[in-house]
Image (cartoon, rainbow, N blue to C red):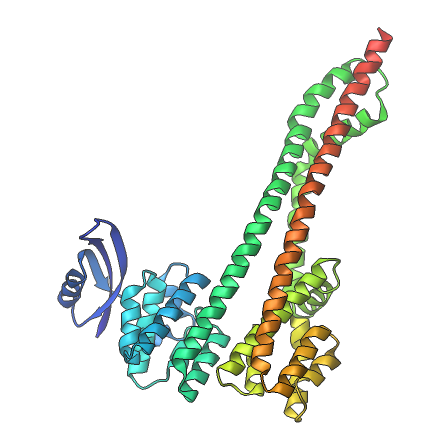
Length: 407
């Protein structure tokens, strides 16, 4: 059975749509589209095949961006279909027809084809690493082995939705101060490059000794107007050098260690890393994975190489039969609250629930911290702008007052 890419018009609404559909022939593909209420305007065989789906080729061919929200919605729909009693292959086919993302449609066709050929769902998902993370694949594999695939998919959907909502809240909180910062910089640059030179020309023609603030203002304006390209070049060069440095393993390790020591941000970054560690670990254990495989997956999803380096020590300690809390404490990185909650969970046999509670606590702390920081940034920007405007006014008024006294 071949895969066809199509463009069509929805008969009910008249809107354009596009996607992929599997059929024995173009005629059958057109008939399937008509049965779905679509009028095909263009249809052609896709270049995607089962072998093309392996690695990164499959997702690339489909095109279109797939967000975390799209993946969370797909996962929840998948879980609902399985819980309703629909067979696995039929569920994948239904998801392929429901999604409007060509990239997901292409990947789902390849996954369904591989599963239909005898491959496990986890292995089929692993062939699309750009869409399905190592965490996602390993949780699905655990669900398949334990026979709790539906429950695992619901947990995955909950975790993805939680992370998406947290990221959206953080972005919305930071949007206003970032906009204010860029606007303030744009106003300062505009004043210094276009307004100040026209005003100060009058004072320079008077052939009088200008006050020190006015001289500083004129010097800064002349430098910015003459060497703006140099300033942009220095900024671009510094950013490029920094990106090159953190792309190297040793540079990335030093940078990730430095991030933990930055004032204010260091504590915030530590909470984010601990929240991801606790939530991923708890979800993996709830899904049926044992401690060591769960630690392997957690190590792959942490976004701090300094933490990853110490996670090897944690895995070695657990492999020797020690409790999780002991090697976590010996790293010296994890907060005492997380370690105490892990100890309590191990004693009570509810370590999974304890880790999820810890993750919720850290996520709440991150939100409160960012709200507090945003509340401080706004008045700071206003004060800085006020100081600059005050300096600008004084620098312009002082020569005018001197000229009036001389007259």
